[in-house]
Length: 396
Image (cartoon, rainbow, N blue to C red):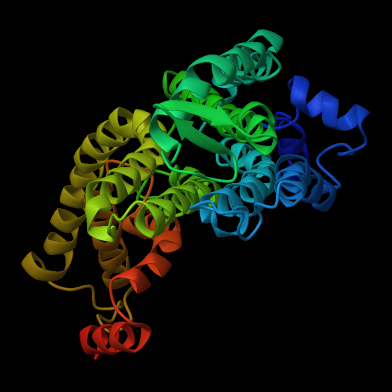
């Protein structure tokens, strides 16, 4: 079968091209199939959520002052959430879409999904696409945003002081006109996009779990040390913008608490560590469903290549050591020597097979992507010159 024919068998898999929101983007000309007009979406969505807040705060005289503790321009959490995190979440859709189909195509082209398992593989794809297109799922997300999501925002994220969006009178939160747009339009938009992404991650997890139940054909000597599944490790890189967006939101929330509630960066140590650990684990856990396949391939590879090595070295020993060496075959340059070395290398590859289809490089990258937005807050602990000296002292 030619490479072109194999590629034609690749399913049209995308976590992004479907669902009511995607259809709405198409109708409003905020997207063209498949996911063109990204810049338009990255501008319009933040403007809907952020610009009205600026205009209404300006009308109320609360942009830079107004006799309140937190004027609009000083609320870093708002600007980070809608001008940085929200565009990152939108841009991530294109990144994931562009990489997802070729990666799945590799599972077929490498023969990891054998021909007799392909009907079930395509059934897994169709099941994932039906869930992706679910109207009910996104309706439930909207309902959650306006119930539990709204309560969570009021209880955990609202600053209990005079701000551009609300004042607290006798323990009761009184929203300003800008506050109503913030609470019932801006925050729900962000929360919906955020939760929609985690619903997509659930679909991806479910799909990989279904694929892991197929009779996959792994090659223990594959140089990626994952039987050929190393290509799936690249999927972790695709989700880096989502993790960066979450790190940025946490950074914005902490900045508000540090500047206006008297807290310090050290007070959020466990929140920072918890966010990094949870998000990095969340992205990698779906790939661990293949661990049983990898461990089985490693056991079988050790047994099979061990038996092959035993036969070969026995014959090599008999030919070159125990018996008289062949007169017409010089030892120097003999293909037997090269084959012995190749066999040893192959057995070493099998021994070094990993139990997961990803390496420490992806983990490090995602840790950095998540924690990087928090680094500017270190300036609240040390002056910039002192911070640079400390970093140089560590590095040098």
